[in-house]
Length: 572
Image (cartoon, rainbow, N blue to C red; front, side, top):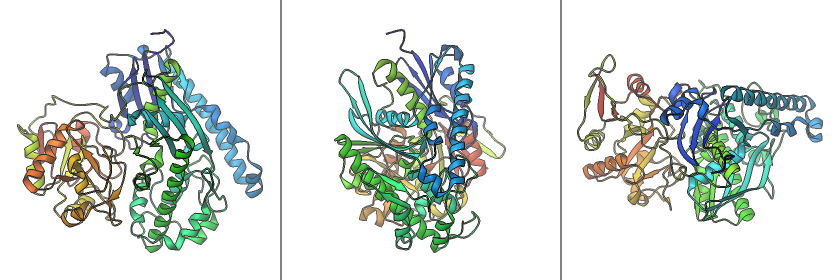
């Protein structure tokens, strides 16, 4: 191997939301973990200290062993937005200048952060990676495909908001990755969705999924034309009307919707105010327009690349209804989304980009991989691990867990290596029977503490999935919502959302042996190879990444028991 090729590459998403770290050794991804899962701070913005310590310690390495640090933003790429466009100056000169200053400020801040990284890793090269390039390489590598179109849609990556690339992995391991088209801010689908999420009374950058769920209860007709005016389709993509959606200023205090938009819809809703028809209808129109734009972008990606597989990444890729619509449209033979499509995944993407830059090859270990974080096998618990809790060891845990689920218990599961991404993929989950009509109410009211209109996703044995959901292809990362079958409506309506869809996860033994065993045992008891699967956390807190966090979840929520590796823990 050439001396110029780094043996140890550390990829970082840091100093912004969803801090994370990933580690490549000799061109293989050996670990990835989001900082919030270890720190307990949801959407942690800090340097991912805990994640880096675990990654290096797991491999017996120190900071001095890191050859290259790959960071997921490039300072200079913010600067084109520092020059206001003439139309922006004419439309709102004050806002245009505030926008300009904010992009200069963030460019300087990003430059300073690179200097901090050089101080923390004095023996390593520090390489800045374009944000969408990091998103794209991760989305492609995670898919396991050899040839694909890559569509990245998010709120902002330096100045880019939407990019289309082609990726080809040749038989000798070399990767050809080329960006074909780009849409830049202020045209941003992620920005629009976040702005309306905030307007509707939920946390921007966190609760867009709540708005997506609310949309099923509304009628898009009332605000259909308004959303078509706000987000206009073009031949190559879309534009955003600044008379309705305010120019972006990189500040959390900046208003994102204009007075005209508010006058044509409703006043901002406070989080403690009731949800009314107008909020439901606005959410429905927003979701409808998002799906239309995403379908349009997918068709454009097919035209620009000619590929038969589409890899989608970026924050908007978490809009599972849009991904389902793309898959159902038949534009591509296959549509994939990585387990961590948001910014945390760019830690892996940055490391992959660094390796590709030096070697010309795509790193291994990322394809269809999600269980990449800390594991706690061999865990020993005290009989009373917490005041008021009792623990005992199980001999046949899959069978016992299935029996308790069939009896109607809601159970937290903490087993194996920590998964990547924002969705429950079976190692840090809350499981429940879909056959009990009261389970969803209990889950929302006493476990997750969230809105009653939000659906719960099913996890299904892969070879039985088509009996319940019209998937068309496996869905290992719970990334697509599809219509359900008549059997699902009849037997397990608890997993069906108001729009007749379910965001299913499919599993088999190769992917997750333990969860497959539990589903098989549950099917033997009930005749149904399906469970409700939601993440092991309560509202406002991250997915539990450590045993202590899991025990806290048991103490603070209404789950009936916790399976902590092979320990059964209950409250007395």
